[in-house]
Image 1 (tube, one colour):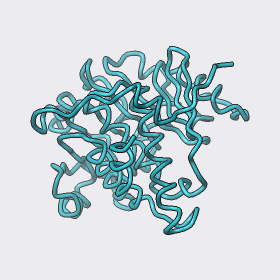
Image 2 (image 1 turned 60 degrees about the horizontal axis):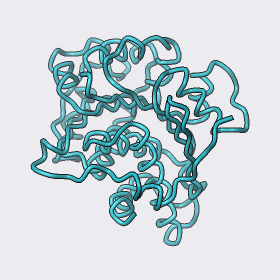
Image 3 (image 1 turned 90 degrees about the vertical axis):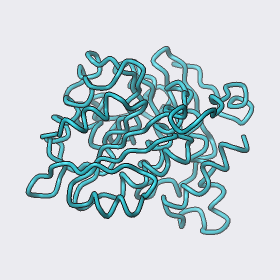
Image 4 (image 1 turned 30 degrees about the vertical axis):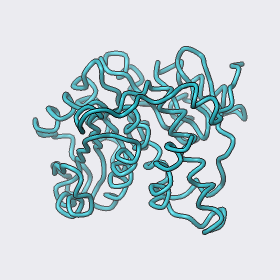
Length: 286
């Protein structure tokens, strides 16, 4: 059973994030790939969270039908429209321009808002080989389902990885029901996929270290909250944080942001988009 360290401000201060210096390029580029005709909001939330985490440049790749609206909603981002299926999902027939963006990105968040597992599996298989050796890919939502079908996909990738599963997705990744010890389960996922893992307030590194955040509340279990966490991890990675470090800082900021909102909206009344206004302040005041 892994020894678990509690994530506290002291722990984070002793593990400081890289100091932002220079221009936007020095703070790194985040590329978020996801969305569908029905769920473009996941990409918006993840992208804005990446900027709140300190990323210098943001690129969003979504279905062609939603790209214009998203470019207006997020004027800070470059937005690339992707081919879509008849049902409105992102098609696996990815343009060369996207794969070139993957190769140049410091962090890629794949999964928010995707809704077709077969197409997502092919997208995963196309994206992972293109990510550079210094890049880190954050896999979330349907991308995790695709990974559970192809556990070997990460073995052949040059890049690092962070997985951000919920309990159901973690069970798929392990091929079994989860036990009550989420620290042990996060460690099991990390060991199996050789990736850092953020699982319901627990962060695990494949080297065996595990951390737990204890401020999380029921309010974080709301639509879009996971997209915010995945994007925040990507933003911290882009500015130079290591995978487990980004996971710990993001998990703490995500949970404490919810705590800050609870007095105004109640324990379960705040929205995922409102977390965005709190995470940067939380990180800055650790």
